Amino acid sequence: MTEPLLRNGLILASKSPRRRDLLNQAGLTFAVIPSAVDESSVPMTSPEEYVRLLAEAKAGEIAERYPEKWVIGADTIVVIQNTVLGKPRTKDEARLMLKSLSGNTHKVLTGYCICCKAAQHFFCETVETRVVFKPLSKAEIDWYINTEEPFDKAGGYAAQGLGTILIKRVDGSYTNVVGLPVCEVVDYLVKVGVVQR
Image (tube, rainbow, N blue to C red; front, side, top):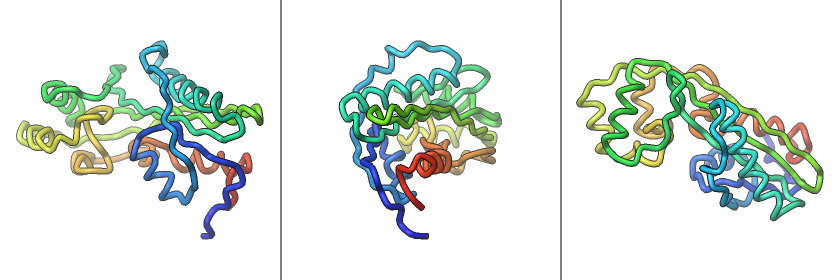
């Protein structure tokens, strides 16, 4: 497979090292300019619409500053039984999240937005992946919390890290669980001619 040829400047509007790594693995060349959007300013609607609106706001903010560039914005949330699990701030919050995920199926939703203001191009979508956790013992939950990996992770776990041992099955895009549906993003960039394969 040949390295994709970058025909236009590409910006990732996210500080997430996981999204950066995923795009690097896909062979893309891009700049990282994190969005300064206040996430609390985006209204909570349905989870699917909420992550898409967040991605749209993040991409749009950077596109305003760099109108000639193509911008990728994204946001990922974990949803179980219609409850959105954010990033745990304390061990108690992480424990509650992991207990709720234990032995159950949850959804990982990533909204992504690809836009270029000068080209008047704006595309946003939400991708869903279902994740099945194995039943977790108290000892396993305590061990995982003490690794400190749950913190700063939506849902309190990292599929690409030690959290991989908690996952029994993934139905759908694995990279979506990590933070970005790479197949869909790259396919769209190829479709609009931003990159060539």
